[in-house]
Image 1 (cartoon, one colour):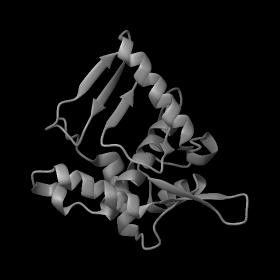
Image 2 (cartoon, one colour):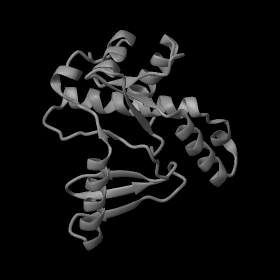
Image 3 (cartoon, one colour):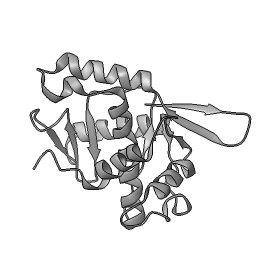
Length: 180
């Protein structure tokens, strides 16, 4: 849910598209039967995106042998995709909705793999290189997280406070697993 802009320099900034976040929230609320999804906002969705980027960067920094990539798209999907060499897991909205697991030997795994790889290549890939992420400590500070997003060319919303960054850190590294 990113938007790319280039302001007359070699630096490319990606900012979170809050209108697309709003559309995502509205689509989730349309399918929801009430509860916490009706209080969810575009700003919280934006924080969720930044938390995902922080999580991926933190794990890539700690475990460089893993292949971890993040790409931002100007569209959204109602599904979540987790692809590994062993399987593809497709989830939606949380534990109350059944997940689908497709093992790597299955015919449909091959085609979903091609689809997801094509989507990834078409989106804006974030440079999770050592030079961009190696400054992250085991418990990143607000300053380290701001630097990470700057290194990756991600522009935080103008009104992002230190408290917002602390929320992103908590969500990225200390949030509970909704599937447990």
